Image (tube, rainbow, N blue to C red; front, side, top):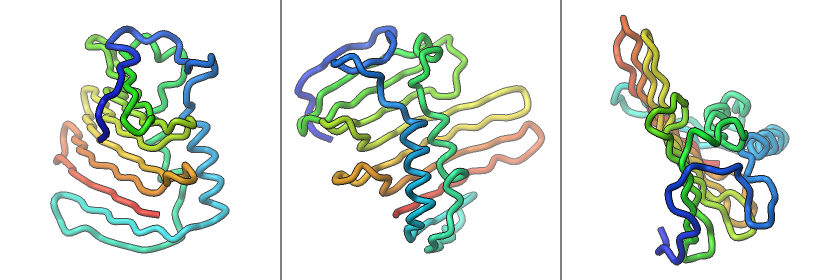
Length: 183
């Protein structure tokens, strides 16, 4: 990563998210819907590997991807809804290349799915990268997933993504899995 040039804000409760010109913050759900429509139309070749329980990954190259299902986990990381803002601290950093890293960290007493979200936004406002940790837990189920999505620097379109996760049911074995895809 580039060096930190300036810190726009330090850890503080998150106000309604707006950028410096007063527009709404980056809406991940809208971005993913637009990407899904584009990917369904273009049907790019995707190199995808799936591994579970430490086994060798199963690798396939195919244009046949259910994009709604494939991108759903990333939609869960969208924190642009105002009702979610009170549960996070927000920190922004301007990076060496002019991009802005926006980090959301769950407040300790908040019961939210997204525990951490980091968006790197290009100077023109396009998404460059997303990193998040999603954790869900109740009396019968535990899930912890680390997700990452990267975009093409020229177009802002999705270029790769990965999900690493652990799931455990109270009466079942622990399942560890990893999914990686390159477009």
